[in-house]
Length: 222
Image (cartoon, rainbow, N blue to C red; front, side):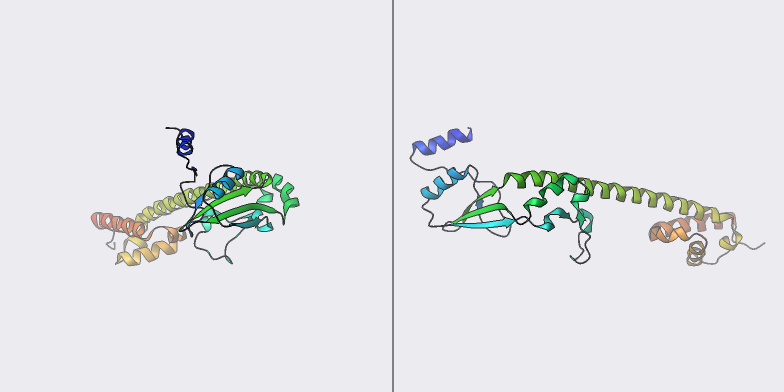
């Protein structure tokens, strides 16, 4: 059944259908977001005999031009780096003329145990949000790409460091060390990049080398 057909059945039964969004307007409060035009919202208010409608406004501020990248979760506001999105999508600068203007009206009619809400967005605000999303997607995408490259570079350094560690089997000063702990300390001193290698991976590699050294008798002084 289509929604309009369902609504018509209610109208035929002399009831006023009110379509709402499936999720709450705000996760911190109970309420239903009305779907339809402002005129239809007013009709619904009359149908439910709402005694009053609360109006809350959101004003466009300078901070709306800034974005906190997604990889900064867990940082405090003082530690977080905010990026001016106007440097990413220059078209956003055209919206500076709207600073201080009302961007959104949020209407809320209190019901017995809930509320029925309606949001009016200024057309320019909707356009701003589209451009803002373009800019934030680019920022987050660039950061993720940089992070992926950094991870790949680190993995490459780790592989090279472990490869250099394996070559220490040719170093008598290494092979004759009495303990694996001493071998790790020696390896870290000779190959600084091993500092960033996972500790368990480093231990496993040294254990394998130690076994090879024992098997080949490389730990014996000649």
